[in-house]
Amino acid sequence: MSVSSSRKIPQILGAELDKLVTLPWMWLTLMGTFILNLVLAAAFTSAGLQGAAGTQSILNIGLASMEYLQAGFIILGILATCSEYSGGQIRTTLTAIPWRGLQLSAKHLALAIITIPAAFIIAASSVLYTFIMMRDTAPGVELDTMIGTLIGAAGYLTLTTVLSAAIGSLLRRTTPALVVVLGYYFIISPLSGDILPDIRNYFPDTAGYYMYMTLSSEEINVLTPMQGTGISMLWTLVFITAAIVLYCKRDA
Image 1: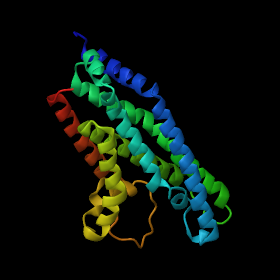
Image 2 (image 1 turned 90 degrees about the vertical axis):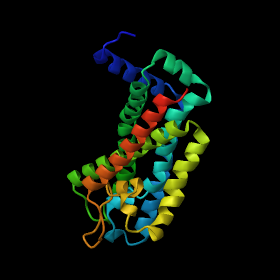
Image 3 (image 1 turned 90 degrees about the horizontal axis):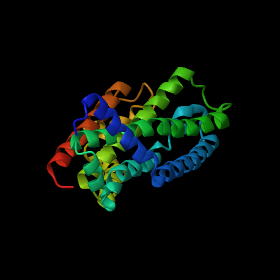
């Protein structure tokens, strides 16, 4: 127990990374998400080729699947925190790592470390497919713009994953957490556009949209990528903080 903080934090982070990378469902979720993304990318690209492809951005068409792609990352985040409760493994974790705040913080950090490259590769695969199929019909895209957009998309998916993990930690049960988070992203938030149009930009999913989607200069009431990133990060930090506080106060 007399482990110095300089050694404690890397050891806890390493333990959480080891747990995540050895979970089969994690890789199955990422593989399923990757395959689904390619299928959706093919569908949206085909629709673009049959329609007004010449007036659409390759990036916007390539990232049109993000609205559905995020479901896989939501599931990934929730399973990362809820899976330990289903079989009672959380008691073993807390016996080995009694520093609850550090342990849960390290879990979220480990999840982000794994999610960032996976999200970038998955987002880039759909954009690459669209670029190959539409390079002769759609307007060209500068390389730095494409990289910046893909970084924004990967950042959004990572923040969504970590936020979902925090909500999973708060609820501790997989099914209720999935119902709450998926219900918000796919039902409540879309419907709120007509009810709360003035504040919807400050919701985590809508703010995250501006992290990666290229918008025309005629569109109004939009956020910059930095503003969208800041709002999304704030929502994520709020839920992580709430999860850590409650985690430290209640029984396993």
